[in-house]
Image (cartoon, rainbow, N blue to C red):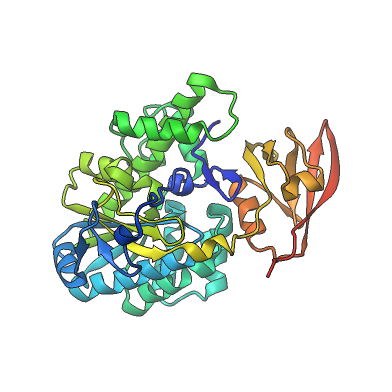
Length: 386
């Protein structure tokens, strides 16, 4: 089964489109480079925060994009949430990070009934989301402090797979949480998804591409449906969603409009600094917030350097990046990674989460299956250069 993929730091996983086709600023003259800390309209015109937030306060839905592993993006989301809450305290925060089955844990968290570790355990965070929960806890604490409801708007990979493989009519309405079939993708969105699909060595051809697009539309529709439902409970719903689902109104915004929620706005982070310089392109979002992204070039996260897809026994390796940790460890295309650091893997996101916990200069033991035989290999992460 082919599912949406993320390409980030040499690791391709079915986590989210958020990093699959991340748009960066195009090279431009220094005079046109936006300064960090500015709100900008597509095309580059600066917006004052007061005017922008006054406008946003009249929306029914505001969608905040993110690169999931970027701490600055989450701080920006937190500050934006605070600004919106000051104007529209009757609000709901909707999360891509968790499937609907995790809703009881979110309710208990907001009510103050769970500590951090209990929330992680009861929500199934690590199995549902491969990114460090510490990145999100400031937002979660904000919600609890102000008693802002948190809503899980995602669905499990298993349900997405059923909807793609079996079709919408074959899955009972209750089992798909009342989610309806998605609106057709625009030609521009299909083109973007085809570019993402081309980034990994799939053997699916045109049929695989169609399944990939269909899976992405299921994902977009599920989140849009969750947003629409959450919006019935408050004046304003604010969605925290990977930016690839939001750019150019193609993904979730398109599905949200199809569900009748037209009074919406998308806000995105925008990288400037170093070679990344220039105004955001027309149509990208209602507004972007400029970040100095040059520091990330010097501080990349740990990476294994593999292209992976789900496998019934763990995670299947489809290709190895030359010179990567995976290559040095002796991993090969076709290997099935069964365990990492003693933990069984159910999906590529599990592997991603464990890799992100690695420190420079450490070893990650992997149990793999190759040609029917199981063996252990050690992935050695290099020390961080100074």
